[in-house]
Length: 208
Ligand code: GRF
Image 1 (spheres, rainbow, N blue to C red):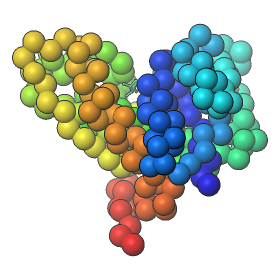
Image 2: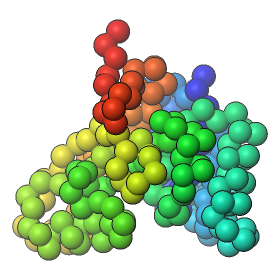
Image 3: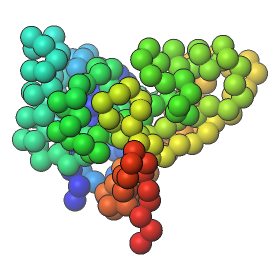
Image 4: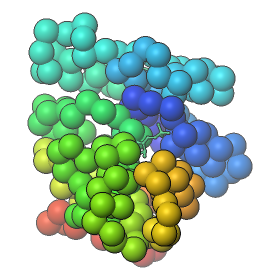
């Protein structure tokens, strides 16, 4: 069974969606480890409650980004991780980490890339920008991570309607429930089935 490692900084509702889909039999993978950069992140407790090994590996304890990345690489290798899933991970990792796991790191972003993405677009800021621009449709994107910010090959996207009167918080919850928790497990299952082929920065779905 495919072993995945999850990197997360916050509440971990995307991790929960993955664990629920494993429990229901939709997703055939094992979460081998959950790592957070924040020791107080609720995602660590969520993981432990489900019997998944979880630990904090904090950037604060390393002199530079390179040594932090090396610690993460070693950890994932020790755990036999074949796919890394960034689910709300707020540290931007450099090319050393990305190249080590080329096309084996997925990220979930709460907008329809290439809109509302890149540096500075994270968390509620994304939904604030969506509302400020007045777009009527937003959504979420799962993509492979490359050395840019939100520039890697797109795997899945799902749209979500924006309604009059939405606040950033209300919109964030709708995007999570209608899009993120759906497409992240689906993308992982497609990877587990070896159906994602990357050619020239484009993901092609292999039809078997
Ligand atoms: C999600 O909105 C995700 O798209 C973004 O960070 C948030 C993480 O939420 N990158 P959670 O920790 O999975 O609840």
